[in-house]
Image (cartoon, rainbow, N blue to C red; front, top):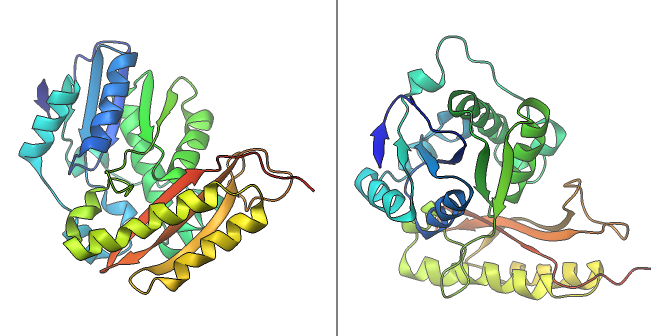
Length: 269
C-alpha cells in the first residue's frame, strides 16, 4: 500500500473510499467492498473543517494515523491518500449547496454541515476521478445527498452503499464512540434497541409510537426520531414505498446518529 499526499498514476478503474480517519471495522467493510469492485482502492483521510459548525468538535475529532495505515492495508487498500488543506481547497473556495434536504433533520442541528460535506466530496471526486465511490449507510442523509450530487455533477461515478456495521450490542460503529465512557457506551445501546423495535412495526403509527419510548431514557438527549421516505428524504406517509427510521441525539456530549430500514411491509390505509 502506498501512502501519498498527491494522487498520481492511479490504475483504472479505481474504487474510492473517502474518510476522515480514525478508521474502524466499519471503514474496513467499505474498503473490502471497494476491493470487490476494483483492484485499485484509494482511501482518503482528510478531516474537513467545512462540515464542522463547532470548532471544539473539530478540535476533538480523533486522529490515529498509524492505526489508520494498519487497518486500511489489512482491508485491501492500495493507496492511502492524505491530502493537505491546500490540495483540497486551492485558491477561492466554491461551496456547494445541499438545498432544502440538507437543511432538514441533521441540517437543522448542524447548520451548513452538508454544504461542507458535498463541497469536499465533490473536490475529492475531481482529484481522484474514481469509477466507484463507496459510502456507509450509517449517515443515511449524507448518503442520499451525495447520490443526488453525483448524479448531477459526476454521473460517471457509481455510488455504492454498504450496510452499517454494528458491535455485539447493536451500537453502530463510529469514530465518535471512542469519546464515550463505558457507561456512555452502555447507554448508547438504547438507540439500536429502539430502532429495531420501531423498524419491525407494520404501520407508521405504531412505529412512531415505538420511537417515542426513547424519550424515557434520561441519558440520551434526543434531537429527532422520525420515519422518512428513502426515495425523497421527506417524512414518510402512507404512499411511501421504502421507509427508514432515523434518529439522532447526544450522550455525554457526543452526538450519535443511526438509522434502520423498515423490515415489514407497511399496512396501507
